[in-house]
Image 1 (cartoon, rainbow, N blue to C red):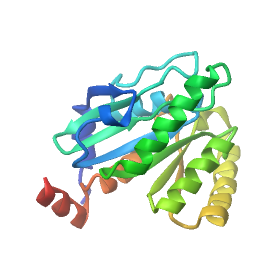
Image 2: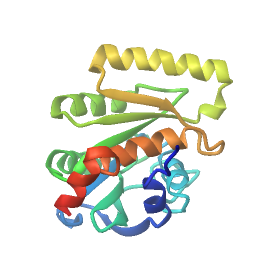
Image 3: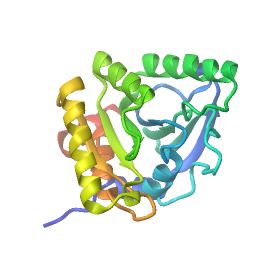
Image 4: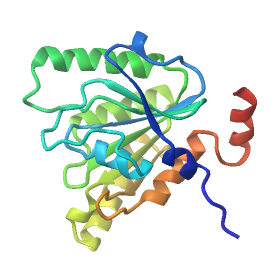
Length: 216
C-alpha cells in the first residue's frame, strides 16, 4: 500500500512569510526549516516553485535577483528558506560581501535549520561556491541534498552519466552524507525524490514525525 507523502499538503499551502536582509530580521528560531542554496543561475527559484506547486519565489531572466533571505511558511513549525543567489558577476562587490556575511551568519547560527538543498546546474556542477557550501555542511554536520537542475538540457544518458560522476566526486570529497538526484523544473523530474528528503528533514516521516510533533 502506498501512502501520500505528508509534505504534499504542506507544500500546497505554502505562503510567503517575510524577507530578511540580516539574521536578526529572521522569524523566531524554533521549529524546523530547510534552506535552498545555489548560484544565481542554478534554477533555485524555479525548483522552489515546482516543489511547492506555487509561485513563491520570483524567477527572472536576470540572475542575482534574490538578494534577501526569503522565508515561506508550511505550517506553524515548518518553513522553507530561499537563500540569496550567489556568484553573479554583475552584482557589485559590496553587495556580494553583504550577502556573504549574512549568509554565513544565518548558516552558522540558525538552530532550526534541519538541512540544506544545494542546487547545481547539471552542465556546470561543483563550482567554487558549491564546494564552499559542501565544506561548510561537512564541517558542521549539516545534512545536504544536491539537486542537479536543468537535467532536461542533457540527453537521458548524458544526464545519468553526469549524476554518477558528481556522486563519485561528492562521496570522495565529502563522504556518504551528501545525497544527490537529477531534477528538472520544466519536466517535473525528480519531484517525488526531493519531497521525500524534505519530509524526512521536516519530521514528517517515521519516528521523526512524533519527535517534531512532541516539540511543537
